[in-house]
Image (tube, rainbow, N blue to C red; front, side):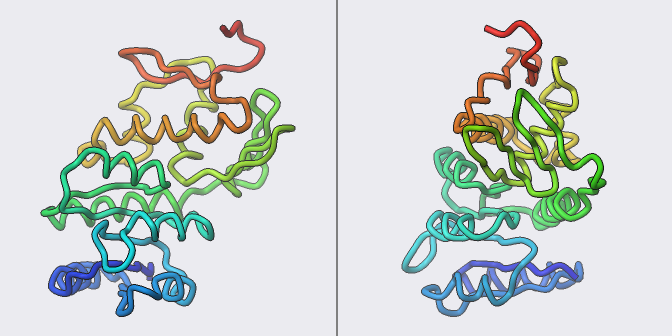
Length: 232
C-alpha cells in the first residue's frame, strides 16, 4: 500500500480527497499542525506528497523546498490560483506535476497512478544502471550525474527525460514521444509542463557544463548529442 501525504488546510477538501484515495487503497496522512510539516514527513516517509500552495504560516513552495533538501519523493501541487508563474515555480522547485482547482478526481487519480508507476516500477537492472555521456557518468538508480565538475542529483522526471534522450543520442525525440513515455497518458499533461521540465534539466546540467549537449529542434522535439558529433 502506497503512503500519500496530503498537505491541505481545507478540511472538507482534505476529507474528500482522503476518501477517494482510500477507495483506491492508498494510505493517506494529513497535517494537523502546519508548523510541523517536516516532522510529519520524516515520521510517515510517504511515497508521494500532494501540497496545496496556499497554506497557514508557510506556503507550499516553502515546504517543497524543504522536502527537496531531504528527498526526491514525487510531489504534486494543488492550487486554486490560475497564474502561470505558480506552475513554473512548482516545476522549478522540483515538483512532478501541478493540478489546478477545481479538478476532476479521475484526473487526480490518473496522475497519481502514472507518477507512482514510473517512480516505483522504474526497473533498471544493475548492469545497465550506469551510462557514460560526454565524459559524465549517469547513475539511473541513484538519479545522479557526475563529472570532474561535480555531482548533481536529479528528480525522477529529470532523470527519466535524460535517459530517453541519451538512449536515443544523436536522434530527435519528439515531444509527444517523451510525454507518452513519461506520463503514460499524454491527455493529462500540458505541453508547457514538458517545457518546464526540460528547462529545469538543462539548468541542473549547466552545473556540469553539459547543458549545451541537449538541443531543442524547433517544431520537432529534443536531441542529446555526443561529443564525437560536430557541435556548435
